[in-house]
Image 1: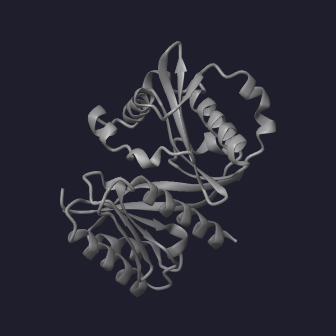
Image 2: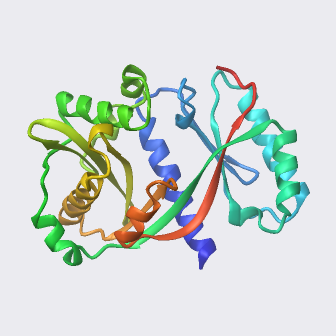
Length: 270
């Protein structure tokens, strides 16, 4: 069961990664030897991704897999990220796993927790009635600028780099339910849900640093889930959480599926 949920998470991740790079004329979408590559070849590592697709049952299998990933990245112009599910290498002792990844030049950048839920909005009806924010869909240029600004500030990105890292126009289509929440006219919080197959992928959850820990992210998430459900009738939703957001998502009904380690290759092109 867990392996099926992991495969589902990866399938949706790759679909959304492809959607993000549709405006690029030369992205790589490749699957081979247990790897899936969604590589825009841009300066932002998060837009250049390699996913390990299947369980690795021996140190040799891990060695071959990460060696191929490293070889691919070294031949590209810009750095990217390798996503490796901990469940997929549980047959290999942790110290051996670390040794292989370090030897190939991969540095751990962080951990993401894949989560899944069937959302029943009726249980949050009182929350939805007490929303303090006024929401606008992120489609027009001014709202998209606010969306990018909040995301940049929340994650300590330079404003111009944060705006440049946003997906192109084709991303913000009718199946992307992205919103900015405003408090007295000031943009405060964001969230986006992207419909893929019969699932909603929740992402871009962010709150302006001056307004954090006041429940605005919860409001943005619930508004996004409500709007997307009313438009699509999809109640199954997945996301990736950092440790900071984990408890918020748990309170909203999400359950952890697996932990994904995120690696950056040392001395890759910049």
